[in-house]
Length: 207
Ligand SMILES: C[S@@+](CC[C@H](N)C(=O)[O-])C[C@H]1O[C@@H](n2cnc3c(N)ncnc32)[C@H](O)[C@@H]1O
Image (cartoon, rainbow, N blue to C red; front, side, top):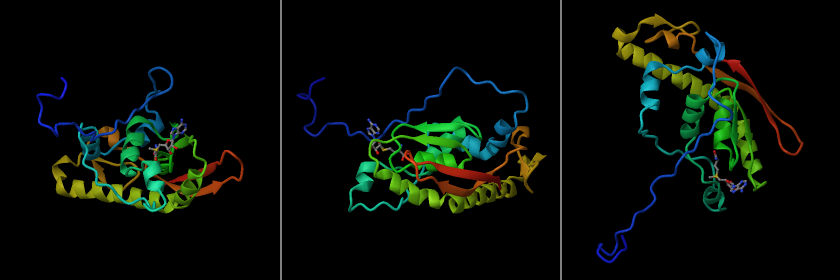
C-alpha cells in the first residue's frame, strides 16, 4: 500500500510469535484402550480451556537475570505455554524435540509431563541454565500435579451436576468416560551425565 496516504505513525508492531508444531511420520494410530493415551487425557474443564483458540497466560519469572543478557538471548516464555502444548500434542512416554532449546523451557515441560525430550542449541553455555532447572523438576512436577488435581476437585465441587463418573486413580469424580483413567506423574529423580552431549535422565513415578 505504500505509506503516503497513512497517518505518519501507522506501522504494525509484531505482537505475536508463532508456535510451530511438527510431528514425525504420518498420522498416528493407537490400539484400543491404549494406556498411555488414556492416562494422558485432560479433565473436561481443562480440555475446554486448552483447546480454545485464545489462551490467557500470565508470564512468570524464570530466574534469568536481565543484567547478563541471558533473558534477552533465551527468548524465554512461561512454562505454561510449552506444558500445555506438550500435553495436547503428545502422550505419556513420547519424545519431544526442541531444535532451538535455549534455556530449555520446552524440555523442562516435557520432563514434568512424563515425556522424553531432545534439545539442540548452538549456544553451549545455555546447558548450565538447564541443569539448574532440571534440578528443580521433581519439586516442580509435584506442585503442578497437586495443583492440577486441586483445581479439578474444585471444579467438581462447583459443578456437582457434571460429576458423572468415578476416576480410577484419584478420589474424585470426572465428567466424561475418557477422563476416568487419567494418571498424573511426577519426576522422581534427575541424573545428569558428564558426557557431551549432556544427558538428563529423569525417572517418573505416578502421582
Ligand atoms: C527462543 S530460544 C528457544 C526457547 C526454547 N524453545 C524454550 O523452550 O525455552 C532460541 C534459541 O535458538 C538458538 N538458536 C538459534 N539459531 C540456532 C541454530 N541455527 N541452531 C541451533 N540453535 C539455534 C539460540 O541460541 C536460542 O537459544
